Length: 128
Image (cartoon, rainbow, N blue to C red; front, side, top):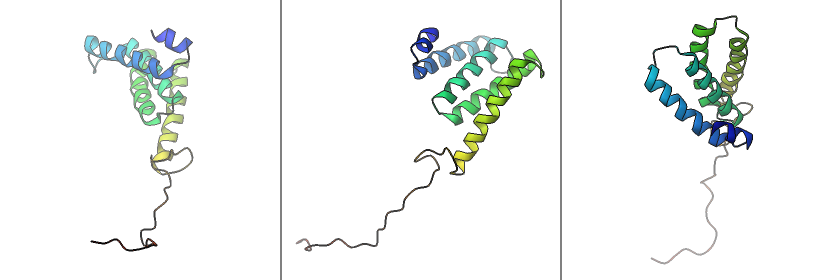
């Protein structure tokens, strides 16, 4: 199902499928055990979150993947080094969004317009 969703460019559906796989792996292997399949699935999940601009979720998933794949593949693995680059990029965007900087989405920490409540309505006063 993941392959089909990716082929169709439906990243939101792909996220749902990978999340289900991670839940199954967590059940089978536990969350404290570093299994390479968990690391690869959380890497995929983080990458998908990044593509759909859910940077906070991407950073969390990629962080978990970094921890797992460092243990299973080693610090100098090309896969781990690429993962760390994506993690750093996602963390930077997440941090900027929290501060309301570049890339901040409306309603997600970005600048907002305050309504001027001091203006009085014009017109006739209503009867009581």
